[in-house]
Image 1 (cartoon, helix red, strand yellow):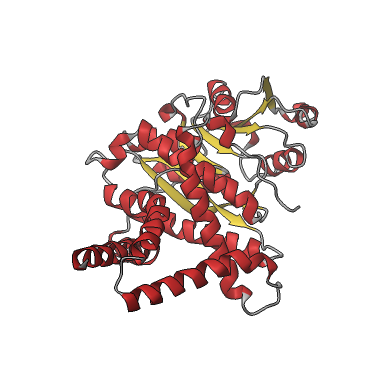
Image 2: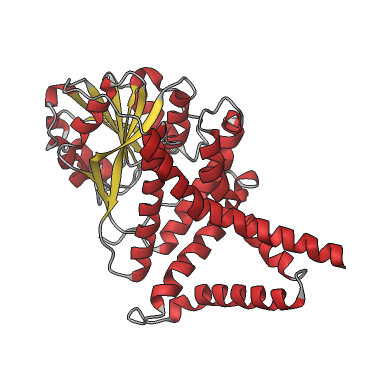
Length: 381
């Protein structure tokens, strides 16, 4: 029994330590390393030819504003090719895009096949030196394209992400979801300063066209698969916070589905790029600490819960009560009034638990067709 108790203590402590390392200690170490080892990006004012690609399915609510955002960008129109690929839209998206034909917008409609196929179609028609891939919902700051393109003066930069800013939410839930995204952006900024991120911000990023590869049709994370092809050829993937795009706040339900898809997509990526775990990955310690580590947090939480029952009696009671209270906060948060002081604690806990549940369900990618994990993100306009 003593040996079992020791083993339970080791498992509990190791699991708790791993969670604390991934969520708090590693980001602090990363920030310190970025301050000490940060690499400058070469920039210039050369205006390179670009191809802006928008893959859209049923984006009638957003496509008009999106195209106007692009057409008002502070970038020479003669150097900008705009391509819209409709992935079997049936809500009037196609008609809205066609109304911009006089503005030189190239439009292609394909039978519904998924975003990767739509992106492949757009890339195959691109003629610009730089690809600008952007989603339909987000609007762009007028100088954002120019700022992204300026980074390609650096010969080792292959992919440049813009910074996605979430508009203020009206509820605590939306605010906490936005806070999680700010945490994610912080991590990416520090990685970018050291060397590279492990993917791009899908809503808005640029890439050298010569580095683009064909995306498999069942890919869930096209904005990771495509940039990684450049990373493993020695190029950097960076985040430029002067290139901004703006999005609407999302509910926790929508964020749950997005998280499920991204974590399922990460399992996919590991199968496609196993070298992420090998010495071929020059940022391996960062990948293990950030991406892979967060993928493992749900399993660490389960190990903590199970090992609790093997702890010495007093320690078991304390650990059990703490975990019960923690999960009760998450379970009861929906019924707690928005103006309650308790909401300040319960809402972030619920957000964390829901996102960890989504990460755990990412394993479903091994049992269902990946396309079934795509859910349209719903936002409050």
